Length: 80
Image (cartoon, rainbow, N blue to C red; front, side, top):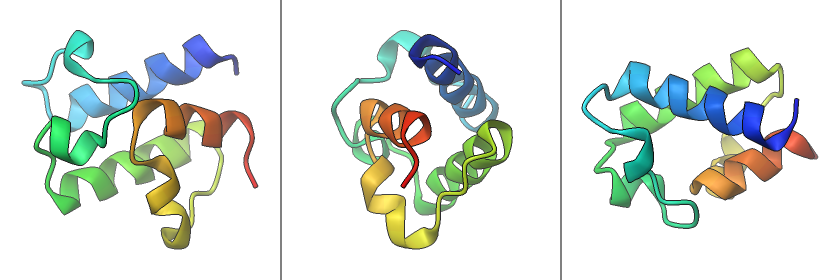
């Protein structure tokens, strides 16, 4: 997957979890939990959904590495 495909996947899963959020409201380099007022369960559901769709395992220990949109894209593109 390329960067644009991964971004689209993340934004699609985010809209499934929080349909009130518009894609253009999602900041690239700001903590999504704070910027979009996602609670911990919504963020967890996002990480799980992105992990399943991308087939890249994101262990709980790495959640801090995927807090921003760009960080999540980078993580999916270059898994540890």
